[in-house]
Each structure stands twice: as C-alpha cells, then as structure tokens.
Amino acid sequence: MAQRGNSASWGHDYSKLSSDSSSNSSLTNHFNQGMNRNMELMQKQDEGLDQLGMSVDRIGLLSREIGNEIEEQNRMLGDMQDEVDDASGERDDWRKRFSKRHQNETYVICLFLF
Image (tube, rainbow, N blue to C red; front, side, top):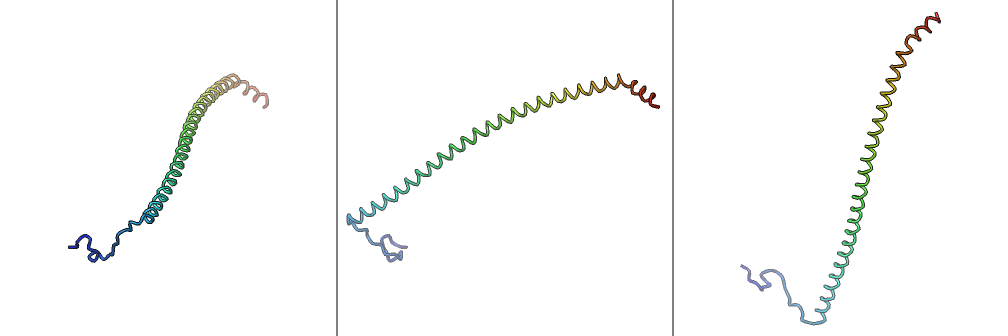
C-alpha cells in the first residue's frame, strides 16, 4: 500500500509552494482576474436572460392578443353565416312564392306562342 507523502510511490515529484509574497500576490492577482472575468460573463449572461425573458413576455402577450382577435373574428363569421342562412331562406321563400304565383302565367305564354 502506498504511503501518503511518499512522492516516489505515486510517480510524481511534488514541491512545496514558495512562501514568497511576490508569487503569492501573483497567484492572488491571477485568481482575482479570473473571478472578475467570470463575474463579467455571468453579468452578460444575466442581461441576455433578462432580454430573453422580456421577449418571451412580449410573445406571450402577442399570442393572447392574437387569440382574442381570432375569437372575435370567429364570432363575427358565425354572425355572418347566420345572416347568410337567413337571407338564403328568404330567397327560397320568395322563389317558391314566385313559382306558385307565376306558374299558370308561364303556361299561358307558352300556349300563345304555339
């Protein structure tokens, strides 16, 4: 079993980090720069997500308005269909009345022609 701290058993040579304050401050600066970049990226992502959220809200509002408009148009088409049906019924009634009233006249006209 390998022992801890024995670099030969793991096949790696580890060295102790320097306690030099300049290398520590360099690492700290590098770490801080990385954190700042990450924060900037997260902020940009948040802004993008906020814009996406606003776009989704606008699309939702537009879809509800379109749905309302479609319902209104369907109601109007239904009303129009009812009016067309009523007019067709009246036309048929007038056609029947005209046919009955002028049925004999048609025959009279035909007789005079022969």
